[in-house]
Image: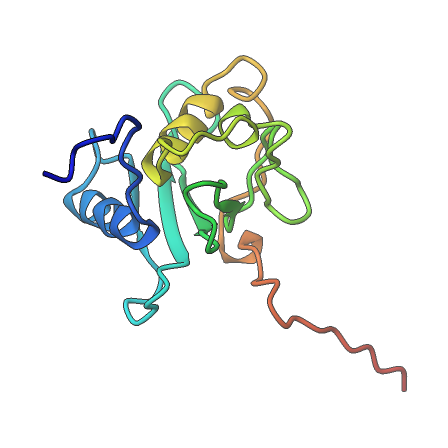
Amino acid sequence: MGSEGSSGPVIVPRNFRLLEELECGEKGIGDGTVSYGMDDADDIYMRSWTGTIIGPPNTVHEGRIYQLKLFCDTDYPDKPPTVRFQTRINMTCVNQETGLVEPSLFPMLGNWQREHTMEDILVSLKREMSTPQNRRLYQPHEGNEDQRVEQKGLSLRCVIM
């Protein structure tokens, strides 16, 4: 009853998938060096998420805490979220001006598969920090002055007196 003629995999609807990811994020992941959750519990579309990565040992990232924003548009999980480091970081796959993780330089986003999760992205970014091209790159100083400013609605005015 109901299973007759069904031959393909079951496609989980977006909101169910995001609720599942939220539950996983709230329970904690692995060794606790990667975590994520929703930015706003009242966001019924579950679009804006925050991630945290504690830098891996034996790298220039060791002990540093990196904050990220993940934005899951309405086409997630069919398309990857937009991932942006809020904390300044020097990595080969991250735009130094905006903090955006460039899909063309980060295979998990560039070769996105529906089965990938936000947890997979954060774990993969942490792994990327340990690669030969990133493990020893000079890093910006830590501190509040190095935090990225939200790009939304940001306008600068210059007044000459």
